Image (cartoon, rainbow, N blue to C red):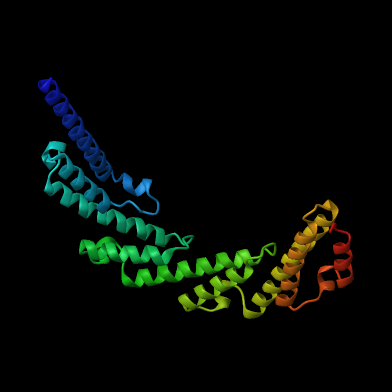
Length: 256
């Protein structure tokens, strides 16, 4: 009986160690192939994480790096390669002006350059290019918010407008640089406000047609949003095709 228990414990230990080996080899394979770049677009799991996981599995399993077919020397080389790959990854993202989170990419690129002990020239860029890329990304981001503002059917225009102005300030360029002006932004803001108010007005009419039990409370909420937009835009109810009288009539038609 005792001998059988010893054999069982030995078998369980073998299975445990083999599990740690398999996991370590999986992480090693991903490091060698550079798959961590493609499987993690945001790089939440990077090469340094994989290296740490390998060390943890080796420690837990009580075996050596050689047991899984690697060495300290290879891991050091993979760390350098991972660092270079990460730099190129973030540099590529910065060169793609569709990127909106460029500040984070720039921050992480600089971090990798520092970690690897490289110069910008060694990884194919320079401070001048990074400043240009930051400006281009800022312009592209501002233009994206401008495109959204030009679509009047939205109620987040204040947020978009604030984000646009933030990019203009960060980039140090003018509104004219991205094809707009203060006057045009005021006009866009007014159009967005009108469109939002009209959207809520359509909801009021639909609510009146439905005549549900919750119609009156829903009407009051929608009316609140309409009046908010009217006040923000500085226009009248007549501008959006309604009046105080019509709104009162709509409310009276609803169930109490």
